[in-house]
Amino acid sequence: MSVVRSGQSLVLPDDEHNRALVSHAHPDDWVNPTPAGRYNLVVLGAGTAGLVSAIGAASLGARVAIVERHLTGGDCLNFGCVPSKALISAARAAAVARGAGRFGIRTAPDPQVDFAAVMERMRRLRAGLAWNDSVGRLAGLGVDVYLGAARFIRDDAVEVDGRTLQFSRAVIATGARPAVPAIPGLGDAGFHTNETIFSVTERPRHLLVIGAGPIGCELAQTFGRFGSDVTIIGRSARLLPREDPDASAIVERTLVREGVTVVANARILQVERRDTSLSRVVVYEYDGQQREVAGDEILIAVGRAPNVEGLDVAAAGIASDAAGVTVDDSLRTTNRRVYAAGDICSRHKFTHAADAMARVVLHNALFFGRKKASALVVPWATYTDPEVAHVGLSAKDAQRLGDTVTTLTVPLSEVDRAVLEDETEGFARVQVDRRRGTILGATMVASHAGELIGEIAVAMRAGVGMGAIGFTIHPYPTQSEAWKRLGDEWNRTRLTPGGAHAAPVAAAVAAVTR
Image 1 (cartoon, rainbow, N blue to C red):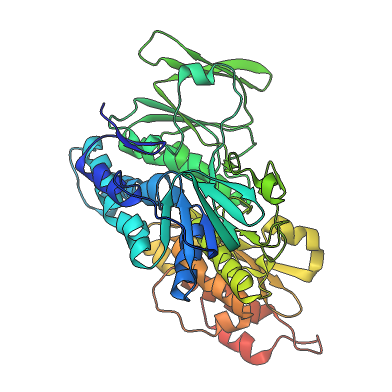
Image 2 (cartoon, one colour):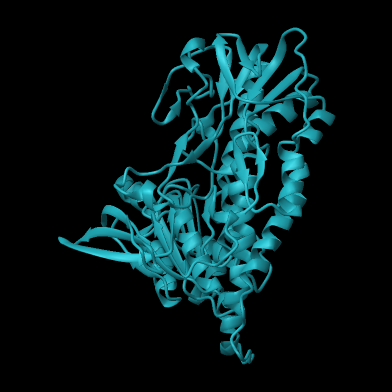
């Protein structure tokens, strides 16, 4: 297979779409500028955090440079959010077609998945979005773009491509990469991560997914819907261990119903390469017994590792560890001139979190502000079907706080739109401060939970309580009515300041709602 080569990155296959992607994200004919004087801001990394930092600073009149060693757009554009959601949408379309019979719609024979066409569509869409994060757009906005590997040479300068870039302030936004576990034989057998799985052009017959977090679950379901046999192997007792157990259980039941084999509580012993059609074998221990499963492709999805190597952060007096660059609540490193944002320093490894952190950095680095990362309200979503979306405290967190927090849950089977769409296996849940009625957290399991969690994130950010949600008119019928139902439930049960009686108006209104 021919290769489009961009710096140290490989983009496969060599087709018009990937050539267009590379022409935007790492053009081969790009000539780095010659630095002239000190920059107000130097940004290392052109993923989401870096792009927001650089473009935001340049729009305010600052003299800005950005350095990228691989592809502008970072993980999100090239190997993460964009390609994965393109495939997930295609997989959902296939699942809807297969399930149309329950609505009285006949699709015979079964819909056929043209895997090559699905992957070509993804590459085309990705290339079409690449201009937004491109070298050309950055340059047009007044940012000096340097392609190459940067390293600190002192506390106020980095070196890239033989050039010294001096700065008044800098932002480390080099992101993270897929973590690869030390499993004997894995390297020899060969495997994919999210950085290579979107380059495949032939559908795996049996995909072995190691890792039961969001990426593993999303891609396990996606490839299963495309027609691959899929086995997902996790070391935790359940899928999506960060989510509420009943949310994880719904996702697991769905995957199993769709034909995915789930192996939880497994300890992987080794990976072997054998001379058979399903040539990669994962050997694992489960319940004290050694077992094995064979496939033709392996996907590793066990987490992320920060991209600190090669930066020589110690030369600038910047502390780092296995979790990434060390920052305080203002996102400043141990070098007062240097800040960090995104996956390099955050436990929330999401594109939207990187965007929000970059805005905190801009405020603090350029305007001596006092914005705090801890004040951010960061929702997240896992894009399985149904989706799992969450913000703030979990049910487990609420249990630890005892009776100061009320947990309210409404099943989607009680939400009319979910019933009409045959999507009743899910729920909406909120954690509410018992005294003030403010929202401390929420979880939703629904087909478009990621779209719906935003209402609660806004309410939490603005200090809007569940009482106000209950009295807010929501369009009927929509699944967002689940939040209104929870607001009604809160209004039904809340007490007057004296604590003796339920608030009469709220109770009366709630009594007539379903």
